Length: 171
Image 1 (spheres, rainbow, N blue to C red):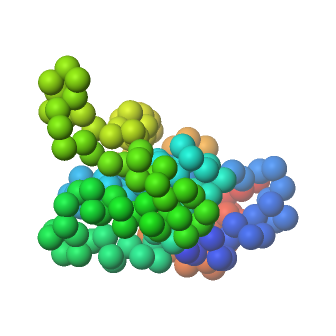
Image 2 (image 1 turned 90 degrees about the horizontal axis):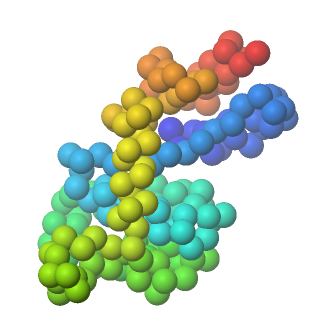
């Protein structure tokens, strides 16, 4: 869906529907794909460091998504995966060291002795999850139209189907 929207719909959206449609890309972690959490954390790091690069980072991440599927991360540590994600972020102009700095998990307890210290974007991810739950989003992709989940739109929607749906529903 990301590629279809990026290439077929968004380039002409403001011309076809001036001031009528706004696309908001919200990250949705899929807990049954454990490495998706790490990928979404990398997106949160990009949002923190260079929000204007988030869409570009998302495009690059989608292009490389198979590299982060379960089979391809199972033999590396979490921080090793974060290093690869930070390197991807650097491909769109985000400082690799700063991105990794937000993602890295410490290997020592926190000052208070806590063992689940998270990383520099843990609280951002908590907010993402809370917002999505409040909106009724449970799977990806989920499309909302005027704040309501629109179940007729699926991940397999083509550019032609998107255009037809928008023509019918945007007044």
